[in-house]
Image (cartoon, rainbow, N blue to C red; front, side, top):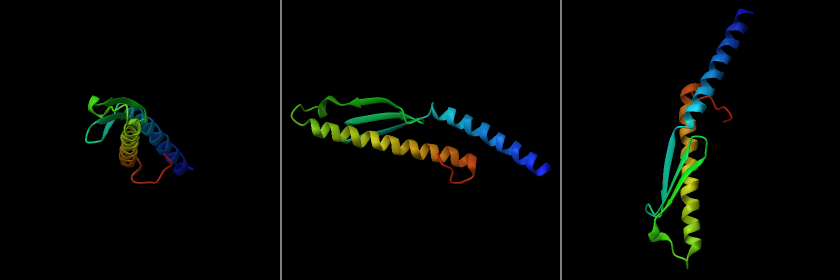
Length: 101
């Protein structure tokens, strides 16, 4: 029975630590660019896009599709970087366990 209590305490401690890490992720940001820096996207650790910067040089009314493609590339790269950030931060906490986050 003592082992069960210890296990529950350990689980509660880990849960509190995970909540702290998730809260901290909101203040961490990643940046991704596309088109040689023509498009920049900044996102936080909660996968919220905070900023999109578009260089005026890349805005061509006759080629809107290229601009759209560059934005997609930058956003997807930013979100991939967020996934890496979350995995690294949670990995330190879980010791490499594959948990569904």
